[in-house]
Image (cartoon, rainbow over all chains, first blue to last red; front, side):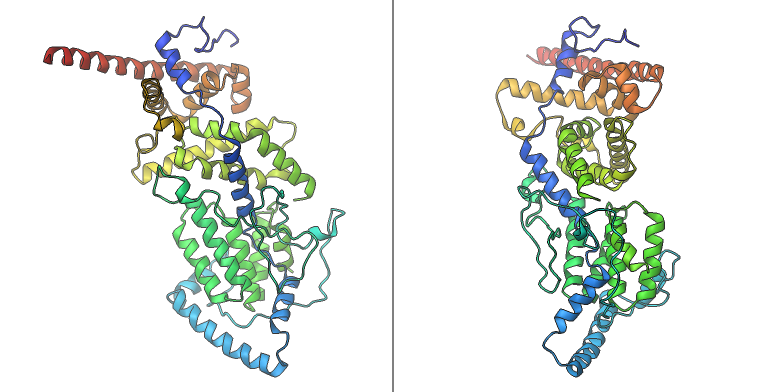
Length: 274
Length: 186
């Protein structure tokens, strides 16, 4: 095999024109800025995932309710649950589709998704075992530390207990904005998917459970071959958990873990599988 | 993923980004999709990071992911009735495309011709051809990267070269014909 000569070598059998054609394909490497942009976008994508552990979700709900009397909170919760429930019905265009979806083996929640007031998770839940000496790695959101130089912005969640290594960092602008691709007006599919999942996550954080559900549904319908299946599924698990669909969330989390045991989101999802 | 893993992942990203970018481009991913496709490759690497066989060269794994992603994109482009190479620019960078001097124009035409030749190859042939002729790898390295026997590399390279030559010959014939026609019209 060693007798094979590269055609770009002058001593090879290729003629000058063939060599010139090949030489035209020796492009320069992409600039450093491109590498940084893709990295930034990649980190943004990796942090789309579920990001509240049950404890954090409970804390979030708790903080949101601070300052309101218990009785008022119950009433508000009931009304909110009702309104949100109605919105889900409208947003998802029919319960039947939802029922169908959730009655599949992969989706353990039989029947329609009932979005109600977020339940509080037991705040005394034991922390999962961490194999790393850094305690903040668990049960924090998907642990992706963004190099400072590449972090374009931070997403802070006021109701969330602060951690010393908050890693829920997203680029404030899409690294591959459409305006940066004048050669094509088509927007990037992956970036669209990232945007939609990010939106779903923000809605989830804001307690807009029906909106989050509708967004996740829309994501599933829009992307027939999604690149971020795991992220979407992890968000759905959290949504179910926070919608008082704990058995469904748990079953779905177990399915997730058996399917993607090595997923970077497995650590978070594991907490919903109990 | 632990901090050490993340550091390892970033090291791979920084070291091999250009290789992945070039590989995807040479496997036919259009310029407009390169960012997405590169990101997809590293998403896959990230997901499988803890399961990676550290004994094998990472470049081999990266290239296999590139091949899969390029192949998926090819397939979905076919399903959408798109013609990647005609929608996309030939192998080139966008700033160069803006240049209008004769040299840049010639380079552009040559790249377009190279793109045509590569598009005429099967993906397997294209992988061998680009790794060997453009990436400058030895045949042994190509065999290792692709995880195929050495004789297979040689045979795919031979077939790919034939395709390349045929495309060039067709181009020459067309140019010759047009020159004669232009001469006849004068």
